[in-house]
Amino acid sequence: MKMQKRFAVAMLLLSLCVPVFANGTAESAAPAAEKKSEATVTSTEPVELTIAIIGKNSGFPEKAENDYVYQKILEKTGVSIKFQVIDDYYTALNVRIAGGDCPDLFQCDSLHMRVFAQNGDILDMEKYKDKELAPLMKWIGSTDTNAFRYEGDLYAVPKNYVNAMTYTLLNVRQDWLDKLGLSVPKTVDDLYDVAYAFTYKDPDGNGKNDTIGYSGKKPYGFDPIVNAYDTAFGNYVIIRDGKVTNSLLQPHMKEALAMCKKFVDAGVVDPDIFTTNPRDKAISGTLGLLSLEWSVMFKQSYVDQIRAVNPNARWSYFGPLGTKVGAAPSMVPIDPVETAKFLCVSSSISKAKLAGLFRLIDYLVSDEGSMLVNFGLQGVHWEYDDKGEAQMTTKAKEANYVATYQLLGREDKSYLAIKFKEAKDQIAYASTLPRFLVYNSLITAPDGFYLTDFENYVNQQLIAFVYGDRPIEEYDAFIKELYDIYGFGDYLKACDTQMRAFGYIK
Image (cartoon, rainbow, N blue to C red; front, top):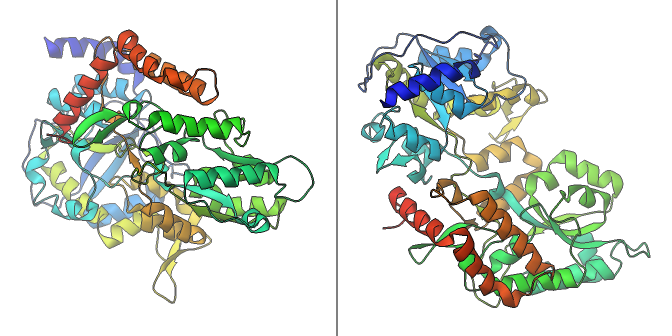
């Protein structure tokens, strides 16, 4: 019955899927995959692996013969990679799988992986973890693999992954600090004092009241402040003392909101903190403190923009902040699996293709293979300098498309330090900062719980508390509303059950 239903859906929606291959041409649906097989073979005969992906990087060669990464992988592993870019990705992918046209591998997130595993559509990789996947497991190091699991078994090819927000920094106009005789903030109170001085003590020396003390990237603008109280600005699933809980229930949330309100009441916060990216104000020279990724502040192109407007501007970086409540230092919520678009393997993959996949994996985690898919060709797009360190050449941008081949992720810290040498110090600093870990992307809301409506109301009310439209004394009443009106209790129970299933708590 299940297959009949899925096949009916497939017939209705099959037209949604238009696979596009590495050479850029469209191709009709391939024949049904071979019968399920989990054994490996030692043959090195060339095999073709079809890999469904959500999108390709710009500049991808139209023809396979012009794709040097494709050619090198084929030469080294005997694997011909055929990417299939699918529109309306998960809908179309479901249609293909239901119709017996599953790609050999496909990008997937944790939520969809569980459905595919439950339906028997993807291969259990657990039995290969200690042998065929051993080089990969060593390469990914301490990467959290819980998100790749279903009922305790490994149902995806693990990869290195990192959320972009991992690299957020607190940034400050060092030249303004020096002029006003101030030090880099270490606590939330220090941050307030500096923001106040930057707003009202004419740090740019133009005799006008035109400077802004503090801003940040939406929706994380207030989080460096709120995180210092061991909570976050919004609905976040977290673990504390071995139990699943929520940021909204943290004991110091009222104090955190009160501190944010202090910033707002003093007029030291960017009025556009929830609506626009503060980068333009940083470039224009009107902003003194902001929470933003290193890449938007310290890439050479942005440094040049800032200096073009104000040659004397000098930005420094710091964080995280401390408070009197003694919370563990952290900055910006990060969901460790939110961006983990890993690979699932079709349960119908053939023996030869599975063996080819393992050869491909071994090559991609080797020094040669990882350098190829990270930076392109040695001697063309990158080279070793006199110190034996890799550096990009003037042709580096021609290799930007190779990121599509980073199927297993990358060792991000070392990658970025090579790719953007001008910001290696900021990258190294940002990569060490403790983060406020959240797990929202692992949670499926229970039936009848409308997550979007819930989060919209939460965000609306938090902003009301901070901007004085609702007294912070009503925070407990607000939490009661979440239980009584939105079913917050059912959501918390679902979070607990699902986090236990993933193995994060016992």
